[in-house]
Length: 362
Image 1: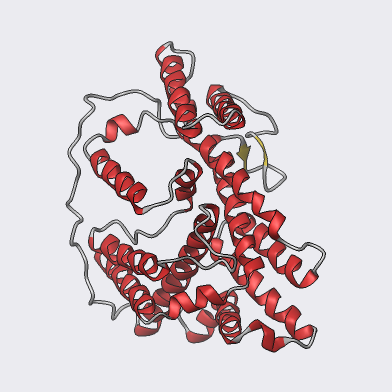
Image 2: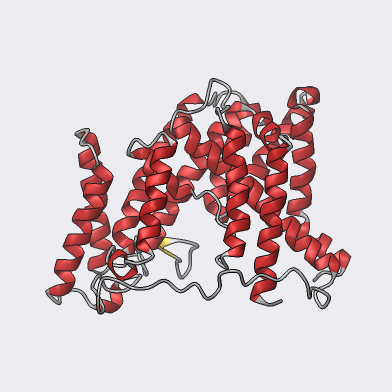
């Protein structure tokens, strides 16, 4: 399959998501999820982005004899990871003192420190995860739009209609629930949700999410959906669409200042993710941990997001566990029809590999 054909599938995925939003089906599914699971989704995303931050900073590595370890060999080595730890502590201290802009101050301070250390020759350039924090040439660069519009909707005959259908189904399912969980998590953290975890203007957000998928495919950059890193903006007080517009404008400007934005080391930026992850875990206070019907699904939702590195898997496990426990207690109807539909969809999700084999897709 060529790149334009793959981007064509992204466009189809985005259109399907928009149709689900326009019909109101996507919003009804989101509102059908029980409140404890919504809190679990928020906490799971918090742990997920914290793990991303710890891993990208080099603080956590894949272990030689264990899945994860402290540093590359059970120890922290190198200036970059030390800079991450220093930036993390700085942000924590500033937040503890209720300093406005704690995250931004921490990132700017860490970036300046990284540039100074690198200029002084203290740090081996190869130790930085995404390259040394230094300018190569000028601060300006022209963006490359050569892939824009490189989309193809035909020529899938070699892959087969069944294969294409499975790929689109996987894209829609993963995109649908990844975005749903992120919107719930970030929206709840922003205190935009009501007592039942429902948010005003949700249908508009869901439609824009689908449009981002289609536009991303047309731009040749894959589907552009909501990102868990948006929680960093919420942590600094972002609550309205103005924050999104400003962020988008700044990212557009960054197209012409790519060398300058590359100055921020990955280790420094990762500290913000860990802090926001910790903040999102505060939703644990809303869960009745003595009630197994809520506690077990929430637990599975929370731990499986970071453990599998997939948001959808956490949501799927929580939904299936919730309906299973309700059924075991003789209260299956309380789950609601949409939760049962989701249970069926997620069972297919977990069994997708053998289903693909049975269909001859693999």
